[in-house]
Image (cartoon, rainbow, N blue to C red; front, side):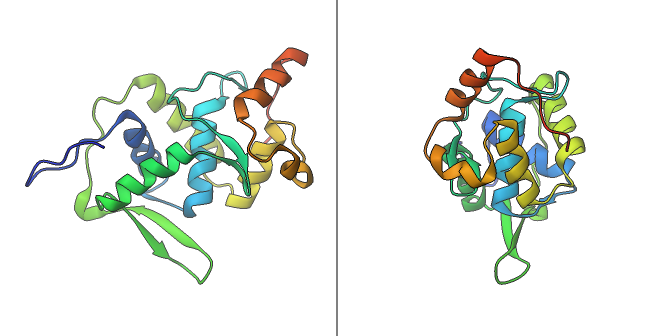
Length: 177
């Protein structure tokens, strides 16, 4: 876990910086954990220049197929670390929905984030930032050629395996957002 010196801002890991930078690009907040995880998946595995999935991610997060589509325990760990340190806060908007926001009192300048990562985050935020969490669930599964009704068949499977299988057949192109 990044260190926190008394009276100073926390030091963020590369992955945490990417997450906070993503929220900054989305106006400081995102519609819940589900959307955050799907956007982090796209940052990890979607090449917006070639409109295709790539196996080797930018941040080295591992994603699996889970209850609501693609999921990463590492992304959730980073999110939990950021909320514990009060960098991010989660606000309920209804009984079933929350918004994840950058805490304005703990705003940290994002410095030292690789330009390739920043460029990818910028593009993902622009291309997919307005999608609903459900739309992103469906879209990311379609990118992996997994019909939403079949996701249980792939439960627990690492996304890299699915990308390998698709690349072996032919390049995979994303479904239009």
